[in-house]
Length: 113
Length: 114
Image (tube, rainbow over all chains, first blue to last red; front, side, top):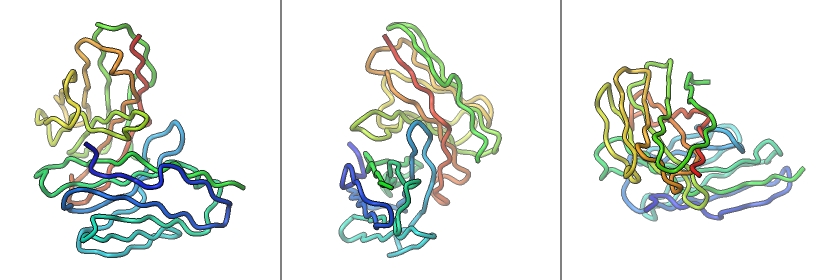
């Protein structure tokens, strides 16, 4: 079963608005990452947050992590049409003992110009 | 962009035939992964490698085998392809495994099994 589940599955917003997507996971983790995938392309790493961090920023991206709720959120501020893509969270469960990155099912974001 | 090349990028084959997908990297990264992506399932890990000749199973490894005889190449083999293996396959690499975290992905190989 999937470790991460993103919510919502799909999101449509106007250019300039903020987009928020959430990721829930099931077991304790070493870190959580967010990736973007443009249609027909491979995934691109956006940001990593470690289990001992609560918030992290990178440009227009803001990621939060709540380990007590086993959840994370990705906020994209001032969205642009170029942000249209699918976004995935990925985790490495501490119970895995190795290097198994587990991905969620993704959120499809559409930014309307 | 990380130097990851997947081949072939597109393949159509018939049920029962063997298929090999190749992932080639020029980054000298230790860790390599094969994922499959299907609608409604996201990315699921098939197999991964943590060094030359060191591989392990992921969550959907049945029907797949892998080999890594040198650092730069990671091969995924479907011994006898089935229609359920129609999917987009992604190779990924990582320099330091889970400690540094970042995965770099190839552009994908779209496989259709008729």
